[in-house]
Length: 261
Length: 315
Image (cartoon, rainbow over the protein chains, first blue to last red):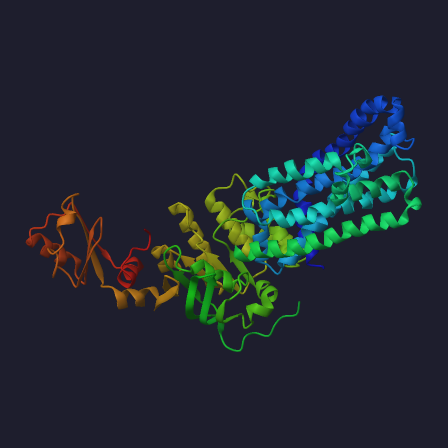
């Protein structure tokens, strides 16, 4: 455990160089999205009677913001689990340099996943602050939306990091984003309830880890989590299971890469 | 971490029947060697001979397929992290962190060994001095020349004051001046008693740095000894190199016998192995051969390699 923190220390040292730009973009991203979609588009949505009914009497901004929180965590996680992992294993090979010291492949995996957790916590916290400033948080439980979003992000970061370790060029990362992250971003209940999807497709949305994250985050932001606590537990269980499986997969692929050299 | 008791005898590395296979491919085929404390030991061989695979097993980052390996008196299979904490590694490919400065690269590396921040800083400054990089301490790594990057990598490998320093082709790709500077630093380490194990495909490097070496070819060790011993055993005192014009070279087969103890007809030149190079030149002239250029030189490890494998070291 203690050894793993040395890996986190490296990532923090690297991050120092881009810290300011990173914080600004973590702040600007939700501001722009909530302005354009929540406020801009929301004004039209809120005028429509059927929409208001489908959203259960919420404003579109209130509906959208917590979903976008989880979706942002997913996108940031996917980014953090692709290029930096490839840099460490293939481009600059600093993970190989670490492995020549007492640090083990498992420490390298756990250290990097811990770092991604820290990054996602920063991003989700800033997002939640912006959300509250927009008046999009209906319940103080939104504080718990931060760990919910981080958990959602890690459900993507762990298997994607494992996958990244099997790649020697970034070509397939485009496919991950184009055919994985973007469709999930659009069809996991972030922008509209999945009940608006054709009935035949709805169960597919349940397979999306993001849908579980969005539902969880929304139930917390709106304070409705008490109405269906069993469902919330199920969402958490699904996400935790993916994180555990993804972590073990990453142990295997990253160790294999380091041993192969 | 408590200090392990020192190995009972002086061998820092001992390998018996050491083998590495990748699927059906055998990279290292049952080799035996040992390296004594304070010794400077080399693996000489062409690319693909199995040098790097051997080094990675010694460095405890690649598991032994078969045979026995003991490093610093311990078993890499179970004591990998403990062994790695006492060795320094200079890999073939640079693995410097280009997002950090020169000095930060050293400090964070010390942290990997669990050293305190203050200790890391102190060691980093000492090593920057030793590798003549102090002026670059706070600059990024990327604009550094190849030679400077190699020196930084060596400084990094020394941060934990290792008992054993592993260098995989330390000067490949460097210009002559940078190589000499690097050799000088390595020579100083050797004089301080640091045990060096290095791989190289440059015979001059092996001659400069190694007390003892093994010649590897096709996953096996084909000879072992000091550079001088190997040259005495497998070559002659002098070598006469003759170069002929294009077209003539190909007609020489059968016209060279008896000019020297041993004759090698290479695609681009003729090598005459003899204890008296000038006499061989005279003999060649007497036979009516008209080489374009003539060079008489001392035998080198290149000649040993050619003798042992029938091929030149760098193809």
